Amino acid sequence: MSKYKNFWLTILSTVFILVVLEISLSFMLPKHYVNKYYKVIYRLWDQGKIFKNIDNFFKFEPNLSVRHEVFFDLNNEFIKEYSYKIETNNFGLVQDNDIYSGKPSILFLGDSFTEGMGAPSWVNYFGGKVNNYQVINGGIFGTGPQQFELLEKHIDQHYDIEKVIVLYIGGDIVRDPFNFSKQNLKCLENHNYCKGPENFYGFPLEEKDPTNFLKKLKKYRDDKKSKLTWKKIRRKIKNSLANLYIIRIPRDFLQNKFYKSQNEKITKNFNSIRNLVNKYGKDIIFIQIQTLDEIHNKGKNYNSVYAEKFITGLTDKHFHCSFEDDPSYFYNYDGHPNEEGYKKLYNCVSKILNKNL
Image 1 (cartoon, one colour):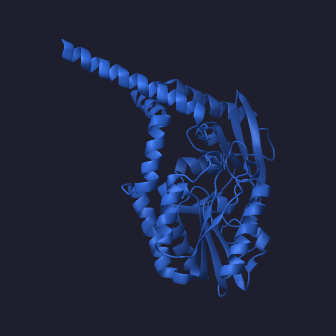
Image 2 (cartoon, rainbow, N blue to C red):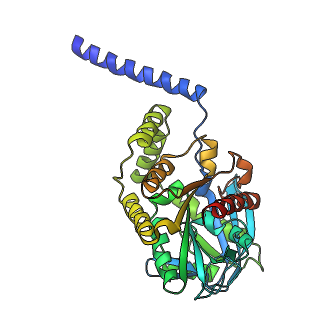
């Protein structure tokens, strides 16, 4: 009997100590920032043919001038965080100058930060040229190194790439290539085809107020959220546990110190990075961009640390662009830089290129 008593006493004492430690840490340490607004985001484009699937990746349709607006459902009110025009060139890339074969070119590869999501593309500040190289903006939202490599091969078939600049954030290394389902393309072409689960929506933004359309999308999401499943319960428990200080602190320490690539996505993305370095050698530059969550959490996330460690093992041409730990350079909810943030990014990249090309 005393054995059982001692066992339960040990368990209860351990739980009590952990609870006290968790409460103490929650008062002593800053709250860990996690952007939860992505769950209530609605991305709308002027309806029409916007994206072009190419095998298992995509780019924009050429010669587009299309409005992109982002809304957030906050306390049952739709807040528009930004609205701007996306302009694409003759090859379906986000920049205001056309590009031509036969010219020595510098290719920018990257995700939405390189594309310039949230404002007219910052790459346009180069005026189509860096030194004597034609600028090609291969930045496309939601992409990672696997997709960078696929796009580079696609562009390389048509243009003379001599220099490559890879701009990345830590989250890029856990991304797979993707393109758009037939249903999502139909929804983007005409909002009447949208059913709700699509992540990207078309709407005649220049002609109508999208409020009723957003309400329809919200109803679909609310109905889906209200259906409780064991999978949702498990995910909620897992996420809640993962954010406890007593779990997160040792986990982050071990991941930053000993993070090994057991993740298939990371392995594939690192292979793509290695392929690009092998192809371009001293003519490729990597630039890591600071993110809003890293500013709030006062340090790099482990994907950023791990990516930098891997890349610097391949090349010494690795640099950083920060926003001086100032969140005012970002949109409040979306997490992308605002127009002032992109100007700062341009200035940083421009300095790096002036010194290293």
